[in-house]
Amino acid sequence: MGRSMIYFAFGSNMNLEQMSERCKNSRFISSGALEKFRFVYDGYSTRWHGAVGNIVPSNGHRVLGGLFEVTEEDLGALDCYEGYPTRYQKIELPVTSKDGTEMKAIAYFREGEKEGLPSEDYMNAVMQGAVDCGLPEEYIEEFLRKN
Image 1: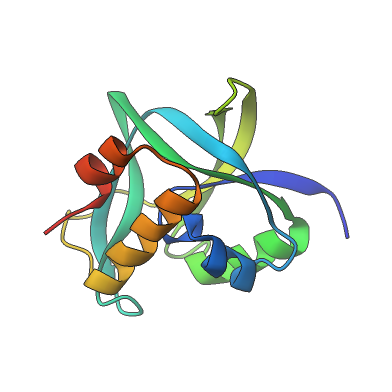
Image 2: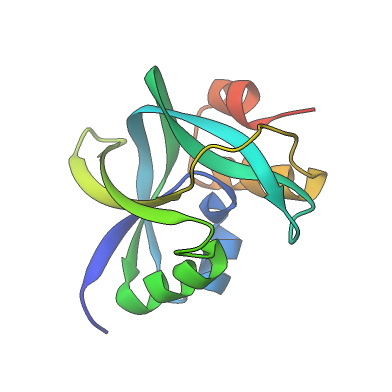
């Protein structure tokens, strides 16, 4: 199965149903926090018909998401879904799990584009994922619900 690694999901991949379809061997570990970044909906996805989740550097902010254990095979599948390396880049960042454990996790991001509104379908997938990962209601309302 190869070695496993930690993946930090902050958009629609927080959705456990979507993750289990995309990454057969993935295992949800915990919610997690990434400091000095901010969650935005930006760019335009033809698949989702609207802006999609991205993280942009921003002091004083933090992004909440889900931490998953993934295999190299899972990461290969994510590379395809995320359009790596043409649309999204991959970076290893320090994240803190709900219990305070610091770890390095892989996250996908792209250069910030014009912020916009997500489609209803995409936003619902993100918000369901946030619930799946146990993110606080205030975070969901403030950062994930748009329109």
